[in-house]
Amino acid sequence: MSEMTQTLADGPKAQAQSEAHDRVTPRDLRSVFWRSFTLQGSWNYERQQHMGYAYAMTPALKRIYQDPNELGRALQRHLVLFNTTPHLSTFMFGLSIAMEEENQRNPEFNEESINAIKTSLMGPLAGIGDSIFWGSLKVIAAGMGIYFAQQGSILGPILALFVYNLPHILCRWYGLKLGYRAGTTWLMRIYQSGLMDKVTYIASIVGLMVVGAMTASMIDISTPLSFTTGQTTMKVQDFIDKILPSFLPLLFTFGMFRLIRRGVNINWILLGTVVFGMVASALGLL
Image 1: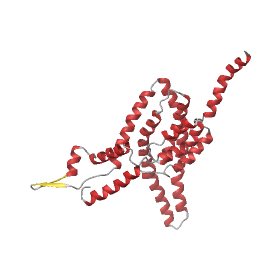
Image 2: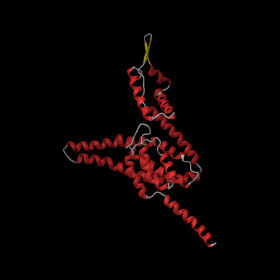
Image 3: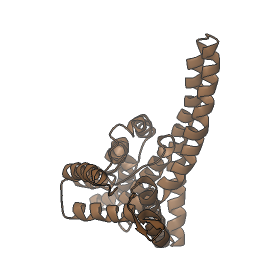
Image 4: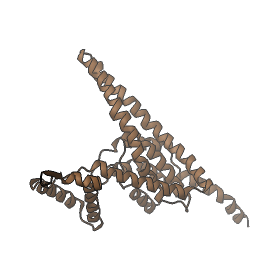
């Protein structure tokens, strides 16, 4: 009887110890921070920053998931298309870590919401980050560095690196902490209010809109074909744009998607795209 009483008494204590063991530590967050600098290290045209994202998340995922099978599924979950400004990517890391912790604790948590939130936020973060770091801060830092370098001062390159990297590093570090803390608080509020399903649904819609916009903006395909009727010359591209702008990029994207769904090797798809582009250009079709 005493052993049973002791077991019941130790139950909540053992559960609390297990949750504490699975919780991400400050050391894990620091590891994620340093790994975030390699986000672009394996950038590719298929899924862009996906391998860098999974690599940066690995220390936190190993802490959260003790079971190798669960860890494998978590890593696979983060090997999807992702692309945003690297300087602000750590906010997404922190948010993903908080959601992974909730997924480990809560059996009813919707795993699909993790990638839905990532996809919906990567576009807005890229817009903000590109305008601040690539469009403004980089130009300002380079201008200041060039001015001092022209005077023969060693402060030129030093000042350029300092002006650019100080806010960059601060954004990475505090973005990670903000994303993790805000994510934890946000998830608690969402679950308490019962809005998690609606948030996931809305995030999925926004994510699809982001991917659709990427198709129109990142794929540039046009045709120089034209035909003449009487004294009027009509360009085929102008005719297509009046009916459905970016129709050729959309058609090309659907073709790539169909090939991938059929299991065609991505290397053959890339090689075929290069050959098709060369042949179509030589024939005057593209």
